[in-house]
Image 1 (spheres, helix red, strand yellow):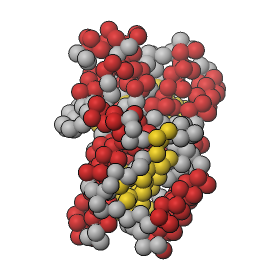
Image 2 (tube, one colour; image 1 turned 45 degrees about the vertical axis):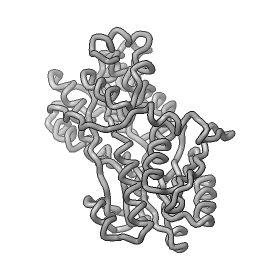
Image 3 (cartoon, rainbow, N blue to C red; image 1 turned 90 degrees about the vertical axis):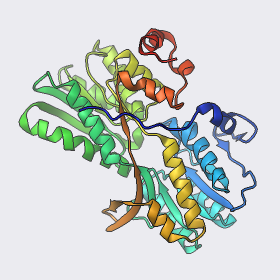
Image 4 (spheres, rainbow, N blue to C red; image 1 turned 90 degrees about the horizontal axis):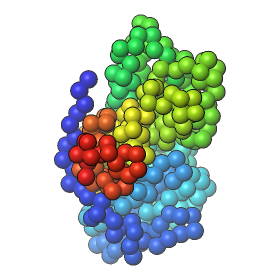
Amino acid sequence: MRTKTLGAVAVTLAALLPLTACGSNTSRSDGATTSPGVGGANGTVGVILPETATSARWEGFDRPMLQQALTAQGFDADIENAQGDVQKFTTLADGMIAKGVKVLIIASVNSEVGTAVANKARKAGIPTIDYDRLNLGGSSDYYVSFDNVRVGQLQGQGLADALKDKPGAQVIEIQGAPTDNNATLFAQGQHKVLQPLYDSGALKLVHSQPIDGWDNQKGGQVFEQLLTGNGGRIDGVVAANDGLAGAIITVLKKNGLNGKVPVTGQDATVEGLKAVLRGDQYMTVFKPIKDEAEAAAKLAAALAKGDKATADGLATASSTDPKGNRTVKSVLLDPHSITRTEVKQVVDQGYVKAGELCTGDVAQVCTQLGIA
């Protein structure tokens, strides 16, 4: 399968750095930052992000990009991070609802707390947008994310491509949290590609294991147990994101298998991209978060005005909530497969700095690939 060439995304991290490193933010004891308003004429939009422990994206990308996108729409942005704490998520939401935010954008710790918060906001007359993660059984009328089934398909196709000359290759799947609907969608997408290969015998599935809380350390431990149980042999690994991939690669290194066993990933993190450049990780999935943040901000602007027609015009896709037996109007953006030769595109678009990526043992590889 040919990978899709990334569309131009007009963003540079240099332009965003004042949002993440300078006086517009203040440090907190939990290591996150607050995002005070900047005098938006259209009121305040509240945003609650889920955590920082398993992915660097929320503070490194989503926060500054949401701040910038909401400011561009004329809003103050009150952006907080629940740090994986359900009670903290609820408390933050209660404060924003009491303050009377115009719209509440929620990337939930889990569907249960996300649903409870959306229900509270609805009673207060505040529209909510599920951001990145759909809350199953929830009440948000709109959802903004990437096409997460497609994310899984890219992962599955990446592994299939890597193992195409190895009939009967044995595969272990290390999936994301079972409480995260995105993890379910990733697995669905992977199996659209891989299940026919399992069924035909072209590939052999050793085991598929979800990891509670996307816990990287736990993922590495589970993988090591499965590898040992399979006699120390494995030919390919589906890892649902770069964090889990990194933990798996650590185990492969201990067993002299890194670089020999293709591993998938997701999020195009600096460490994930370094692993791809080294050859320890076969691919990652790049999701242009600026597009997601801008889509959420535009949708929030329409909802704040009560302009349902404009909101519906933005959310032209739909997502199924099997728990709530409903269809949710959605903005679903395109993800992109990134193998070694595509890493440059992520750097060129400003999501990762060459100076941060091209260090140590990958510096020479960057030079060979024209990454500067």
